[in-house]
Image (cartoon, rainbow, N blue to C red; front, side):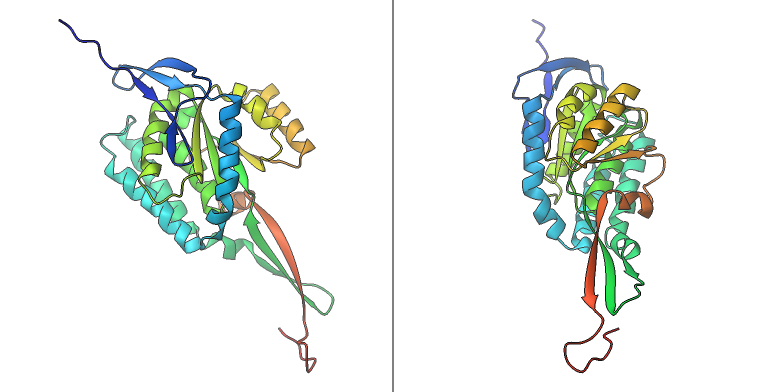
Amino acid sequence: MARLPVQKTLKMYVGGKFIRSESGRTTPARGADGSVMNVCEASRKDLRGSIENNRESQGKWAALTAYNRGQILYRLAEILEGRLTTLPTTAEDAEAAVDRAVHHAGWADKVTALLSTLNPVAATYVNYSLVRPLGVVLAIPSPDEGLLGMVEALCACALMGNATTLLVDRKSAELATHLAEALATSDFPGGVVNILTGDIEDVLKTANVHDDLDGMLVTEGVLSKDALKRAQFEGAQVMRRIVLTPGAKRPASPAELGRLSETQTVWMSAFEPSGGAAAY
């Protein structure tokens, strides 16, 4: 008697745990080996839960030293390197994704020094500009850029101290599951990076009106013109930053990474409390 194959359900990744959609919705899809699998469809409640989880985790992540965040990004590269032969993608895409994680790991403890400044002021004050994380960011990589697109979006947000929800298209769900498994066995704290799968523009309708979302990282060409215009309009209502990126063909430059942060200006007296000597 022929046996029935066990169909795999590709779960989402939130708070360090693999979860099904609270709605119970799934969509059948073909895996890289031709097998049938079920992709979880993120609902409005799933998105809200992911963002709330990001918010709880972001402060602790940002409080880590930049050097420590770089070590954790490098650990992700190590995990992916060990899975190169099992990733359901081309060898070129898999190797490029690992190299991209290493690239951003190296920038983690350098980009802040590059973007921070000592500002000239015509007064008896010292004025510094410091970069701080944007907060909670929804990242939408291009499904056409495979694992590299996901790793680029994840690392760009994480190295700046942000907590991130990756919103992944259905056809990239199998790759996203492998990335989630790498995250689960790396040193990333649960909730710093969450992964949701489903219809991007449908989930985006909920994200647009979620007031506790600080920014969106959107790859150009993923959204229709109307969807992008709606995201920008709704974002303007709550001062949400919409960052458009050309994609993952090249890593984000320090200037582009700076768009995933806020600038904090600090004023200090240029004179010491006693003696009146200049402090600089």
